Length: 125
Image (cartoon, rainbow, N blue to C red; front, side, top):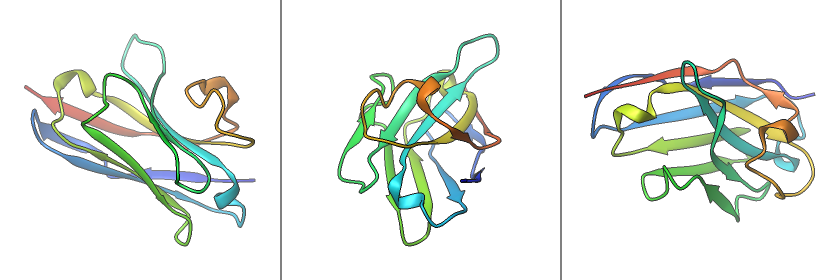
């Protein structure tokens, strides 16, 4: 079993940056594909970014490509989401999630077994 705890959310002005962290418990962290998702009020949960178990492959939603960077440190059981050039439309609760198996369908939240509690990101205009 994997427990995930996000941190790093907050309030930032448009154009600013934030770095989210997701700390995982358990000895098998390095075997999981990790993803970041977000959900704004009244909207469906959407994929933001994903990373393979080794960190060698990364995946991004078109809306964040070029602005966000996902990375992981398997020695620290942590996955990160560096968010630059933030926009008001990035405002949402951000969740990290863990998925076993390969990196197929990394953007499908239904395939992720473990979820964090979420961290709020608010971008003011």
